Amino acid sequence: MNNMETKKWIVITCVIVGLVAICTSFFFILKNEKKNNSEEEITKTIDDNVYEYGIPINLYDVDEVVVEKGDYFSTILNKRGVSQKIIYDISTKYKHIFDVKDIQVGKTYHTFFTKDTIGNPKLAYLVYEKDKKSMVVFQLLDTLNVNIIEKEVKTTTKFAEITINNSLWYDIQQAGFSPLLALKLSDIYAWTIDFFGLQKGDSFFALYDQVELDGKILDINDVHYSVFKHLGKKYESFYFDEEGVSNKYWNSKGESLKKAFLKAPLIYSRVSSTFSYARRHPITRKVRPHTGVDYAAPRGTEVHSIGEGIVIEKGYKGGGGNTIKIKHNSIYTTAYLHLSKYGKDIRVGKRVTQGQIIGYVGSTGSSTGPHLDFRVWKNGTPINPLKMESPASDPIKKKDKELFEAQKQAAFKIVSEFRLKQTYLKTIIEPLG
Image (cartoon, rainbow, N blue to C red):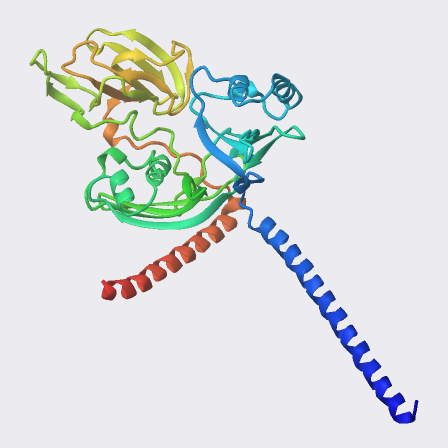
């Protein structure tokens, strides 16, 4: 073989080796790409799972059921194919986490059945809604387990500014806010504003925390700052948590909004008769003193003690019907007449708390219809309950004044920011409308 032929074969050999190398490399690239694609598919499948309560719910057939009368944990599981042994084990071994006897009628639970193509699905999980925030997860296949999952609660700061045209409750709802805010405000101002006497044109604004769960409003927490304008007078409220003090709301001077007495002893529809020393009695038609206020309300309406005190009288008092009399301190005494019945465990000598139910509206004694005749004595002399100035609780302590003032200024700033934002949005939206 001459040199030319030798060179020719060397070139051919190199080309063949090169082609083999390229093919081999291409094979491994395809193999690795296929492997990577498979891994990506697996990862994608895992990532595409939709989890709830820690369960990939898209892998199961899910149903929502309500606990009915006669349902027990054992019967619920048993009719879904769970063995008596598993039911017993779950009930006993995990009793310290959740006692299955506490399952209540009306509560909701969710069942998770395996998607068995053969047609023999099995109950893998049961999730019981313990309350709005907590879910009890029962794992029933393979490894038995019970755990409680707390749902994520979201708290956001809101600002509402509303003028009363119909009622506090209705106008708050119409403005797109939770009616729970009405209840919160009525609690805060219970000692200073008669919320059943609100007038058209009264207004308020409130900076508050709203608690949400699963996109639904769960509660209204602290109202950081609010101003209520009622009958031309302005009532401010600031939230400040002072150690050892039950009251959390104060006016701008640091005086407690919580008074010794509530503004009214019940939820009433109207004042049917006012305080007078010359009222014509609706039954006898005789003119005589009526040293109290009549609140018209449906029979059975709860009647509350306006303040702490001791029950000094309880019983049927002729024209006053069923009556309760409470001595609050050395100065003030109150009485509640025409009751249909008394509150639980109310007796002479019993100490009652502010807001405690002491009886229910009725029409006993000399009465033309269901109402509460409410009376107040100051130092033994009858006074008009509607004009009574309730004694205030203790003001904020001197050591807390500086911190209180700082929180006030912070509240002012946040309210200003909300108002600026609302003004800006209004200038944009109104031209578009």
